[in-house]
Image (cartoon, rainbow, N blue to C red; front, top):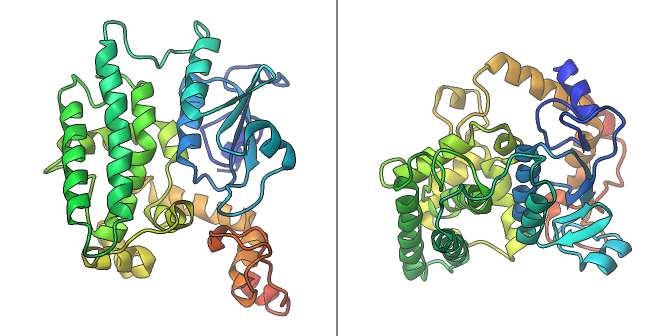
Length: 346
């Protein structure tokens, strides 16, 4: 694990959220043409799409982390020159905004230099447009149900289930597990962030599984195929984080009774030794338990100062100025110091 961390620090190795530089096959010391400005907590769904594209195409890039508005302020120059929205890419000195525009620009700029993620030759343009419309409909249906008030979500649920069935149908008509067949394309990257977040959030708040192989075999197979790709694994978050990071981004999520057992599990029920014998709600990332334990220990030791500060924030009032995401509040700092050493030791 230590060797892998050293490779990441040098711009090599497997993708990870902690990387500040990715060189791939470029020589040491070379300066990437691309800088990706993404959120520091890896919450932004639109950043994830561009991040995955850069990894899949193996385009060298640097990473600069910018707060989302729900948990902090942004640099004045960033607000002034980009409007403040994420993601932003600096390509050959030029700032690009809007994830779709960025992704198309990257395909054009690195045409012939990196593997294309454009639809395969022979794919009908009208079918790609149909899928893009379906992606927008899915996002709207998901958010519509997620934010529907308790007792008033019947129509929102029915609409979501209808749109999800269309997504599943599109996936089951292909020759492979991806939207356009056997190979990953931009279409999969457009869908990935919302499908991932819908699975986590609707399970937690509504008790509904998107990744259910019985009614939605195409969607379940798509998740399996995506999780075989290091780029998705690196950018993928856990169910608990999505359940907690979406309310400040969206202005709230509406919980229903059907989600109670899943909320209990994700809020701590799964964090017990007894739960290790049960199948987790979210498929595990590692097949090697010993390697997973070592990685967790290395992460905790390497970040112990930040973890201690985070754990001590219960003693502090909200930061100033206040933010909507208390779990990522960059301004909250405990004024009480006597307990720091004890928390660190624990």
